[in-house]
Image 1 (cartoon, rainbow, N blue to C red):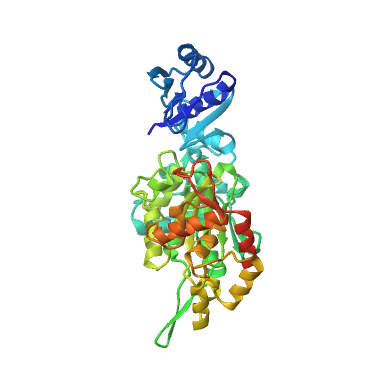
Image 2 (cartoon, rainbow, N blue to C red):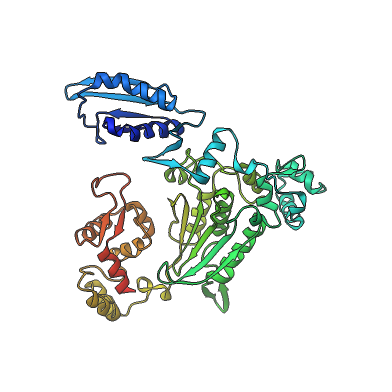
Length: 488
């Protein structure tokens, strides 16, 4: 789908706008308006006819592109429209490659540039030949584990008696005696020898991101890491709340195993391996956060990801092998399965976002008495204090130490306090705040509390110059962060 960008063309700034043209050409194409602002207001051009000649000349000579340039005359002034078609080959400007994603133009470098160039040539990283690897680098136990899993699914018939090299060829993971990168990721004895950062790192954190209590590093191929990381999360990093049915003691996982497994698989299957950045899992008292390097493919956005969508695997050979083993399906239903598993377990809706050039998923636990003030049982006197905005005696003394910022209707379980807690991990949109609070929609009360927090300068807009921007998010101010510190 074509994007558009309104710009004012100035001779001294033409480098910047040629970068935009380059970015559109390398993405899905787009339209640039010269002489308009972002609101669509026409400023007019004093030299529009001259620009009508020079703009296509510059684009053709510096980028090698032929674009459609049109002059529009209105009562408010002239403006120029530049339609940039997508290109099937990479386009660079002065040796640099730019890419347009959503409303952002970025320069492609490192692993991102390598992935882009491979995709433009019709290839993927996982299908590339790993020249340094031999069959001796393949772990036979992982092969047998895979075959056992595939046999149960019936998706890989007539493969049980195959020799390892023939199985790899059947899965398109080998060409002759040469192994692909996917073969090493899936079955390598020590894939970190070839690809640094292939590990999964799990950390348990206290009240802040700097309060690391303990950690584990899971290394090995995907077949091993999937089982070992899931075992570590369930056995060491999360709790098993206890409940009783009659005299029977029942322990259930803090998070549904199906959701943990699906997220972990997505992180390992769709990550960008060539970047050398490991998968990160951060475990807190009330939530667990998964992050893997690699943005969403250009065909998808977070909004599309949450609805009906097709599957666009970054590593199709790795994804296909995992499909045949029954680890994943090929219908793009992973997000739906995670959300449904959380709903069935009575947990808040999970949160999905693109963060730091990667994908981040957050699961939220059920409130527990020991998980903090927002879930601690109240006495009658405490309940009365909460209704007046003071909370418990402990809460009151903390608030007094930080000043009267908690204000009316700001008890420990209030919407305002929960918004502040939600924003301690980073900026969120209003709908994301609602999700974190477990709301089905953006309520009037939520809007009122957001406005109140803005007025008290406890939170602020991430795009203050455009309050109604669809990309708008909210974050804690220095005052808000101090309140959280005082509360903690």
